Length: 503
Image (cartoon, rainbow, N blue to C red; front, side, top):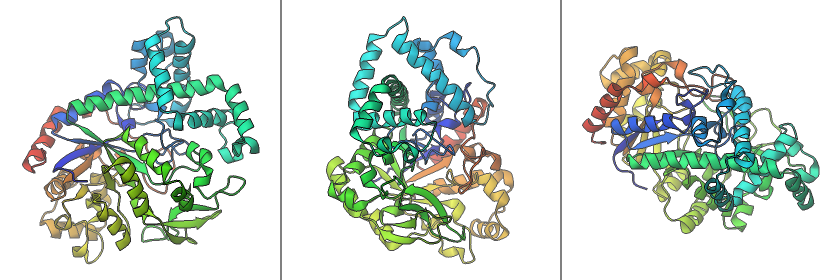
């Protein structure tokens, strides 16, 4: 895939402003898209849009196909009559700049249940909306039926993971599933209606972006969550024992950043089983992603060449091994089924020649992060230095897993600062560093430059989105104030975009 010289902004929709504690897909998203267009940007990059579970990470979703109900704009539901004024009489006192996911789980789910009740049992029936809902259920049945049953059963079992359910349901015994489907009929319909609302609003937001010349880049995590409808409904595609426990799990080995590696715990794919059915699950997954995004960024792309396999159970990722993966064969099957896909390969970390070959054979753009360019003793050989970047590449100041650029400069060690000063013949202040690194990114030969909105706002560590390897209310919670999205910042970004031939 060849991306024309251009630029974009990284912002997850949860970070949008709004009155109900989290970003929503209504006026706030349209305002942001208008700002992007005014700033001369061509891309809006988001993180995975799936429904989040424990830990609130968008990279650990209950489904690889479903949307996050927290993003549904309640004001638009109110305008349509799916919510009434009386439904808003007990709105919590939301923090204006921080998402409280526990609060969202309780209050927003209650609001969405009311919306379904008004739709299904209210006086003002909407035949057109009902017809659209029926069409949605039919079109998305391949994943939606399993997801709705998974979520309804999860509620029935008090939130327990699927491998802790009673064996007949855990193992998807046909009679048990039939009985559950019949007894949970209304609950299943409610889950499906919520997904209908999400996709209706997201499709409208995406169409609005397209009208203004904005394309959406979206993440697809290489692995699915252990506690997901994907794992439960497709056990033969993963390494599970008879009790639904994984026999091996995903992670990364010990490295410079962690002496014990990272134990992610995701189930690993049974590639032999996937090969046997022509990689049908992956073809469907990419089809699903193309319904959400214009360009797909594959997180942890190196896992398609080889992945770190850790025996289960384990306390750390130390005792694992590298196992080859059939990435070439899988991508060939996907390309044959769907054509050439618009994919960006997240090829960060220790990348071996087989990963580079897989990336380059399919002409996927790789990634470069400038915050990684100035570390180490002999930094002159660093692949991420601006003069080493390639055209078919996406350059970032930082990503969702990095500190903000201003925060990075404040906390960088003296060697990194010395290397930067030497390389650029400059001595930036805390205030000037982020704008300088943004300009450096835009001036590189990389076809696409993407910066987090936090860097455009020149915010510090307090606005960091995620600190890998940690949990807690400091991750995934940042939101900006509506007043921060200023016209002068759009004008400044447009000027930089035009000066670097990215307009």
